[in-house]
Image (cartoon, rainbow, N blue to C red; front, top):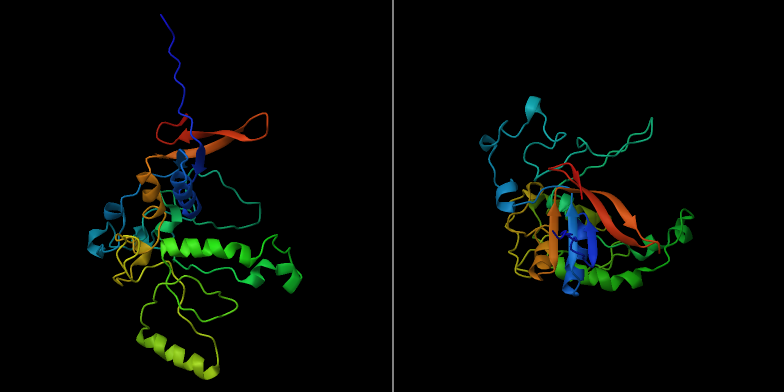
Length: 281
């Protein structure tokens, strides 16, 4: 009887993590013709089911307050959809006597599901730290080298703002900002009187239809997730575009364990743990 040997599918690229960088890389590489697999340690996300954008307190187990008045490290039960400062079973430690807190989201799209959407460019001076303040090192590249890529990203994801020629906050490719609220008009008048620069923030929130996505409807629940994808998230913008190519494979519940390196010193494969079965893949 012949022995059957099953060879795993070989991909051109493996991406670990589905957040901002992973999702963007997946879109660019698959649209460029590469077959790609993405490993995500968390579960899939369904915005209509998992986001809590318009959930009422009475719909939640503890009316939004959490057990004992605490949930998700004081973020409440409304946070979308999965994350914490400390995740059980995570292989991360800190040095004795030190305290480093790192908020992580184990779900497709990661923290882009609920980040603040602040999308600022580095200024030219930010690339010249040592030359300007004597600390660290200057970057080997300049703002001018990166500017075309800022343009590409903003054109794709949609960022609102205004062009004001502020040296520390370079202008970009902006959608119109929302109208100022009452308190903001007061602050702006005071800043103008004191000659203090005051401009609208630059946020990855679309204020008009953009690349097939509906504009923001100003519900002010950004931290709960955005069902309409008006706020940028990796799970709702670049990853779906990567999927459309037919060259994208997503494996969820896959905790990357090690990168296999060949004799030439280059990465050949990724070993991961299937979190459901605890098996090594």
